[in-house]
Structures are given as structure tokens and as C-alpha cells.
Amino acid sequence: MDLKDIQNLIKFVAKSGASEVKLETEDIKITIKTGSDDGKGETTYIQQLPAMSQPQMQQQPQQTAANVSASQEQNQAEADSKFITIKSPIIGTFYRKPTPDKPVFVEVGSTVNVGDVLCVIEAMKLFNEIESEVSGKIVKVLVDDSSPVEFDQPLFLVDPS
Image 1 (cartoon, rainbow, N blue to C red):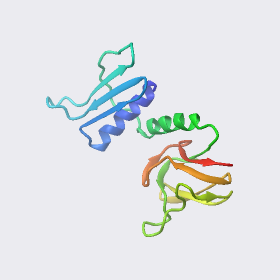
Image 2 (cartoon, rainbow, N blue to C red):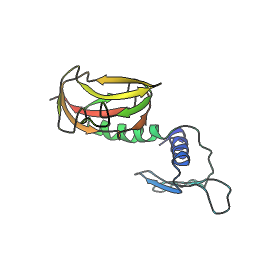
Image 3 (cartoon, rainbow, N blue to C red):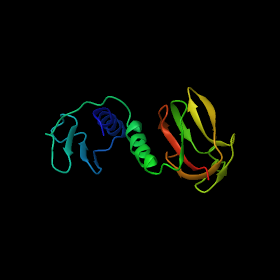
Image 4 (cartoon, rainbow, N blue to C red):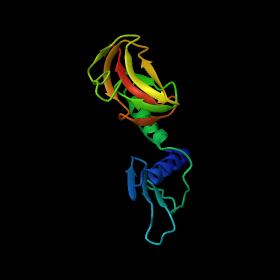
């Protein structure tokens, strides 16, 4: 996890209204506290694991944390290299359904063909249908419904076999 990912996480936590978030991966442990008792804002503790540790540091939010999630999910997707990752072609809000009262476009286990609609992404009040570029079976949906997504953020894992 690089500094940009950490800054994205800090901003996301600040906007979410959560008072404390802890994130622990194999090589880093992060605790973010907002609205501290002394009213001085947020405190971020970063610890490099296993042997090296960094001192406590205070960060100001810079961008959204969608990149942090995407980075973590992308690392997991790379471990499953036999799967094809379908990524967001635009920035916007990800929706799994065409409308709130309709069923989702695809579920885990669904078989898709080239051109099948997988989701919609709302950008500037326009709903853009995202179509599959590959045929296969949906292995994993990497984004929650109604979540903001960034350009090139992984959305789905597809098994082409």
C-alpha cells in the first residue's frame, strides 16, 4: 500500500462519518480515528509489519478511498490470474440493477456473453450500460451496489473457461 492509497483511505473515512477504522494487511496496519476527544480532527497511525514500524503520523484527506479498495481487490485478482478482470471505463456510481425494483443484471455464477449488460454506471446524471467484453462465468462482483467507482477500477472477475 503506497502513500496515495493511505491518503485515499483517510479521505473516505473522513467523509463516511465513521469515528474509527482499522485496516490490517500482511505488511501494514492502519488505524484512523476522526473527531478525536480533543477536537483537533483526525489521527492516523501507520505501522509497517512485521519488523519495521513507522512513527505515528497525521494526514489530511486527499482523494476517495475507492482506489484503496480497488488496489486490494486488484491484488487479489492478480493472484487468481486465470480470471479476466472487467474494469470500469468511467468514473461514476456503480449500480447492479437497471432500476431499484428490478433484479440485478448478473450474479456470481451467471454465464455472460460478449455484449451482455453487467451493470450501469451513473456519471453526470447519465446511466451508462457496461457490457461484457468476454464470454464466461461471473466469479466475483468486486464492488458493492450504489458505490462510487474510479476509472479502471476492477468491477467483476470472469472465468473465461
